[in-house]
Length: 618
Image 1: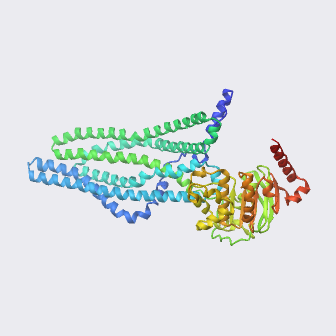
Image 2: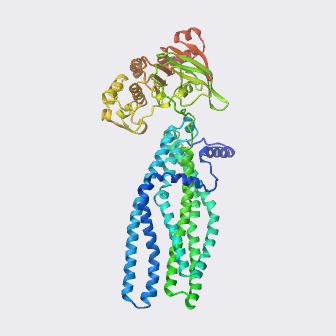
Image 3: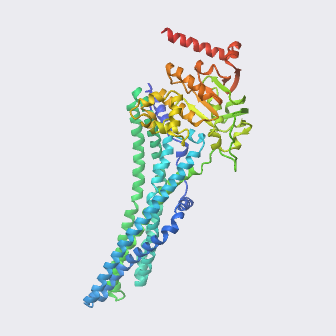
């Protein structure tokens, strides 16, 4: 959310505005002030390498034909003027005209083939790059996502990858064509007349001197555009997900005002970068005009002296027109390379990000487990210097159910995160059946640990597909059996298409309780040896909870389970109840033992009874 309470004083308002602006200065979106990095471009080039043998001969042949015909046509015009028109030789003129028509036809056909195949390569490269980026992001640890908003990650996969399409589809080949064309034109001009050719070339250093001063400014401008665009996407993602809260507190105007400010800043940055980018065109035009002035001033003298013919002068004029076109495109290509470098830096920053939770080399798979779990002197910190767990020790026998109880921030979810190896402990070990979970593959660990969260995530698709997400190879009969076991079958069959009902994003057509029942079915179908219930019954009504208690007996039977819940009915039958406070174990034992001690747990239960009694009295 990007809303704030309206302050009463001007100074407070300014501070509030600054604070909100600072919220969108993310670590990964800081402006990158680096020189042009060719290594980034070369690294992008490695994605084209797999297709070079397949497509390169066709592209090179078509490129060569396009370049040769472009260079041949002005020469044919020059020869036609000097040898056909002056001699009034119509037959020779027809030959030159036919040759030019053939050259234009070859140029058109070769150009079509080149565009077709370069587009094919470009789209394959974009596919590979986006695939690698998304695949790598899925392997990154929770710490990576803790410090980056979803919108900022999304813009890397979409906008930054999309900005490379022009480079891969046309850019690289166009650079080769333009360079060969420039070289060919220079050779031809100097062959026609060295003095006139060198006179015209005097304008080239002038053009490069002026354009060089723009390069750094253009590079930084496009990096700034990428940074601001990323912030807008992050804000949009946050605003859309928090739309219910925005409307509930009637903060639409404030949210729109903040977005309009970000949108305006982005527009100014884009206009600045675009203006700098387009400045290459006028520079080329002015330089070209100077070149034409030199041509006709100096060339006229050479014609009068008999050193060059009219045909050669016309050929020079035609070649000069072709000369500045590739230079203009190369200038635009440089801007395109700047955009590509800015995007590639952001893309490869993510690809180069190493997971903080990583497998050891040649790590073995975790064998089929019984469910013995031990936390051995575990210390963990989300932020350095602020431990979330202090020398935590806990032994759990296979098949036991462990309830974790404590106030918010006591370390309950941290224990779960470490057991699933979403994070690694700073000190100590987490063992399953005597195996340090850092020594085995992550996939083999998590495939045997199931988790049901309070905020159940439902994917777009059918009800059946969402349940089957726990075990993709499960049959329809197994899916329905799992749903029946957790009492989800009745509400599913009441839906318009039953198990084939399409659910929208995050399952918005379902109630919170129905989504949690689906998560129970998903977990039961996965059949994990260790099951975690993290406030999994918090949003289920009392009537549904009575039904699900029986399902839980089936679900938990024979499995090691960890239960985080505040409801007495959910935890009182646990084999061991662990009471936590600020990352330390304060008490442990059965419900009866802890009630007899009349310690922290007893106080929590009494407080819950008082709350329920007061609620019932109202």
